[in-house]
Image (cartoon, rainbow, N blue to C red; front, side, top):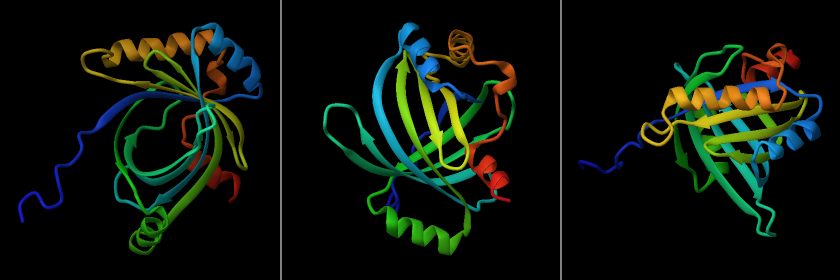
Length: 191
């Protein structure tokens, strides 16, 4: 049956930066002053699975865009990203999941667990950069910048420059930038 599984989605790319942030209210104000627009609040549970390359997680999300409509969704994400204390490129693929409980059970059985992260995330948008104000269970508060790369409208060099510009505008100190993802930070905190 050629094509029975459908065509694989093309990978996406973003430029990321994550930093500890003891004062989310100040960073939020600075983001709004820099022209960012609020896009709502997300409650997320990321379940990670053991894979031979990159990272694989099932993200279950409850979104409140601020208009009274609650949106519940889930997606499977596979991504590759180097751990570094600077903005860094990440390539990823996303696939919607209709039955997250069944998918989690299947992947836990087939691949094994590799951690879980729960967070409350306020999302702001500044052009092609998503600003995440995160409260992560067991870790504290963080700000994350994700610049979405588009080869035509927002190529990587310009997106990297935009992320760095926002880092400065938000007052994110280089010393607060963390190299690892939340999964690794949670694993270390609970070890």
